[in-house]
Image (tube, rainbow, N blue to C red; front, top):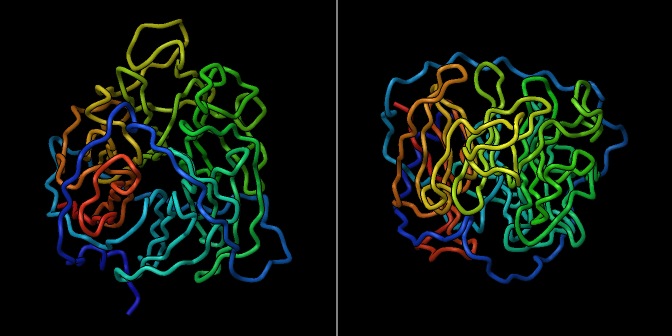
Length: 385
């Protein structure tokens, strides 16, 4: 039987996780060694993809909640994962998941995991490795963001529904460090690829519009500057410390979650050419004119927001240090009071994805900054009722 998106709601595997939170943004920095490199599977394709963005489906209308969502009980969809980071829900309901530390891309079907490929050259570090993945709306290509020995880079694969082939480096030279590598990928309703980068622990790069670090980038399928970019290069917005999540709402607006430094984490509404202030300001501190203030802030011990998704009229932010799932109701560009769910019940939360009438949430308890519970890490499925 092929798993459909609605089958995700029927996951019944038992088990819960109780873990300790990290500290200081995404947590303390453990030492690590590079993960072994592997080779991609499948045969190389002979024709490049079209430069025309693939058609994007029109998102369905989504009502705005007036209060906390009535969530179903979290269920384990799959357990026994190692540092899951990127998560894609395919049209048939199966999942593609990237493992930060192993460099593997897994396929999850009816709770069973298989390895699709091991991305070559992945260099693991405290916050580096195989990070975000995204599939084109027509599901013919997959993009991944990963750290190498010298930089962060974006790689494109052909995806035939079963295997990945024809791996091509589209963009390299993104500054890399042990921490602050960004790494989230998503396709916009305009058909272009959006990629978040960190400041690579060099604060000055975030304000430099000639550097890809500390930015949100907007790319074509070939890794080139998308039409309409404000600086005639890859940069869409700047002044970011470490964007970890991006999501488009039902009106096509881009929202992003960002790690703060010492005081405040952020949710930002992203504007083309917008300057979000780092390192001159953090959170809602007053700053120079022209800096865009966040829509939501939290103390860093309540959030360290990573993955972000939009569903049911709300943004959903997975909190690492905060070990909870934050719901942020939206009314156009206005935000309601954030509501906390799953408070500490499953430890560190990394990524959120929407799947029909449910949201999927990955834990991040095997990342060296927590004490894993039995069968960690896992993907939870939670019904939106």
